[in-house]
Length: 309
Length: 294
Image (cartoon, rainbow over all chains, first blue to last red; front, side, top):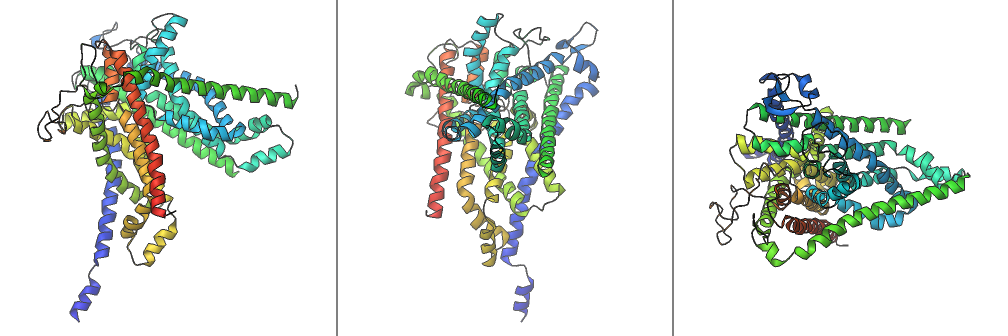
């Protein structure tokens, strides 16, 4: 009797396997979340040291225009003004998004509304393939094609914001195009049918109905492209010239947060002000990627509300 | 102007824009292939790189790229599989799960240079692994985890609940149902996701510059003992990959035929990414056919 009682009260093997499996898979998930917190902790602990250990004024850091940590600037303080890089990053991000948006949306409309068959057969596979091209390849092409082109057409050395913008434009174009096409495809078919039934032409339907219904999705695509452009390191670093000067015009050598980071981090000693200042730049990058994330979430939530109404 | 005329003009403009984009994209692919493919030869693919003279190859870099890819997938696949299973099968629908999903999304949107810097600080400096294959593989894992988890979770979510209920009806536990029924059924899309992420890892450079290092010491391809430092399998040697190589020779500018080598290497990268893409589609379809007996 006791044997039966025991076997009934004891946990079965299946239960044990079940518990073990659940714990293992939970552990995997916890590991990923842990890594995210570790990244934030490590980057912040280094990045904040500039302000707490080296006592650099935050405002001075964000608005100063001289970048040469290790030496003192004109005001007697260490020269850690990150404005040239911050400005450079924002300029190439906004400019490349401005150029890419009309092209991407035009192509997406063509793919979904005008010629869906050719879109599905040729355009979609090509754009998806281009999303996967490594960024150093874009940088190499920028160096071989874009920089000489800019030099011949606009003068200067060819390295600068304009070259960076062109390279990033081509780089984010496939991403923004394929995400915009997804957004347009998600617009219900009966929207178009209703509009056409009212006698609207195809362009009126596209412009007045389809594009407006897809606005949240397309905004997400653009912000996503901007986030990619802002965080891109090597392709930009290869063509921008990497001079830590305030950009005077679009063809003078400039720099971005990512380009100075990739150049500098190996040449500085851990724990020195030069090194800490670079980590502060990394922290700005991290915070900006958080901001882009929040914007995408905000657009998503707003878009949902609009559809429900 | 009447509406029909506007419609015609707008259609024309859209044709123009789409045509222009196609031209840009095709020119891009064409440029890489036309410039690069003539440089690809057996000698180029197998011989080591020469820093100061022309005629070097990309043999070691190519091997390093594949080895790092293999290690990174080996580490990241089990972790993302577990995480994907928990998220899709066990996690309750509440705020905490939502927060966890957000965290993973944040990780996937981090610039790869930040992931590389974290890898430098954490694996290279903190764990004293130095510039090594191992540090590089861990950095790539961090970079790959969110993407792979996402695609595995989606693959699992696409399996209909009938399959799970059938498992429960047979008396299987939840874990057994997942590992014996749901995961095998989702295998085609999981594999597609893995191969696609492999393409991304293969071309990644920013995360590797300060983790796997920028040097490729000579390797002894007859020595396969992983504990020897000159062995190709040694996990503690610095390992410059193909993508890092392209970046380095272009920014240093001391290699006399840097342009030709980077053109060839770029073409190799693109062809590899192309192959990964086709492989993903082909394997997915093939496995699906095999498993469903259609």
